[in-house]
Amino acid sequence: MTRISLFLCAVFCTACIGVKYTPDWTSLDSRPLPKWYDEAKFGIFIHWGVFSVPGFGSEWFWWNWKGAHKANYIAYMVKNYPPGFTYADFAPDFHAQFFDPEQWADVFLASGAKYVVLTSKHHEGFTNWGSPNSWNWNSVDNGPHRDLVADLGDAVRKRSLHYGLYSTLFEWFNPLYMSDKQSGFKTQEFVVNKVMPELHNLVNRYKPELIWSDGDWEAPDTYWNSTEFLAWLYNDSPVKDVVVTNDRWGAGCSCKHGGYYNCADKFTPGQPPKHKWEKCTSVDNYSWGYRRNMMLRELMDLPSIIKDMVYTVSLGGNYLLNVGPTAEGMIPPVFEERLRSIGDWMRINGEAIYATEPWKVQTENATVPVWYTSKGSTVYAIFTANPEKAIFQLSTPITTDKTVVTLLGNPEPLKWAPLHISGLILLLPDLPCTPAQAWTIKLDGVN
Image (cartoon, rainbow, N blue to C red; front, side, top):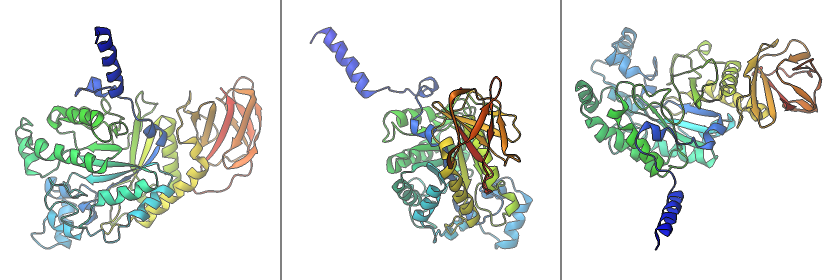
């Protein structure tokens, strides 16, 4: 074989194999984001674990009780549990006896969400699958005695929803982690014997399309071996072509490295970030996990959720909305109501959300708040309050003689007239009074 033939063969083989990512951020950050994620726009987050049993304060119950020694958590335990009761004693009461993954998946589908992210392991270390590296501190050996990760994944995928898994890196009171931490993270016993085996186990067994990493901030990515894991994930894992990752892979990585950026919980930028991002937030304003004592006034109402989603998508982000199920495996009815109501709105207005891109401007000072998204040559103006008058003005779009204006959910074109340089005045029909208090104007043929 000639040298030229060998060279052409090498080029051909490289093209067949595809790009190989090396375990460094320059290489890993160059990986294109799988298309499905940006098009999905809306997902459901689920915080569920042993912390759902006490149902008090937040999912950080164990740390607030035994780590931060907060007085209200100590008082709660003194009042409601016998002396000597440990956090591990909560696990047998994590029954999940009413957990019906098919019913959950039906609710998520009805919400209009395109992906679902389940907490496979939170900072307490309890795994919602039978992790071989978490003996007796997992949902198969203890509590529900079932594989929650597998059960929900099967139900979600039946409905063609993408399935992702949240997994924390650190565990508050794991002896291996505490020892590594005491060494100044010069040892890696926890990473080698717990973190990496579990991440590989999750990926190989359940093939998640999204890895939502967390619990990274106490140590650098070099301690976590993050780049080595991501290189394997992108090159050789069973989900290498479809998996999406976030940015929580070590202290200082947030908003700098990873597939897309979370930056911080409930991150709300003032302008479109230059990198794909996601806002994660919770229906319960005070907790991600279930709280027994939550009150209606402490929850996001439907107009607030829709406004928050529209703002996020108009700035190019995805919206990940969290609910916290009970220890019995029920999605509280108030959460289900919120999710189904979002779906009612999305069935009419989802065209202005899914697979859209930010427009040249995101908002304008109209008589009511207006946010823009776009899709090809179509622009969507979403107004998040009920106009008080039938005459409505948009100042930014530049119309042409081919411009067509409609209201999503109403097949008849709207009557409109161009303004002098840019913008238009349009006549709105009688708008229905809906709980979402948000409507979308579709503009075809504008600049």
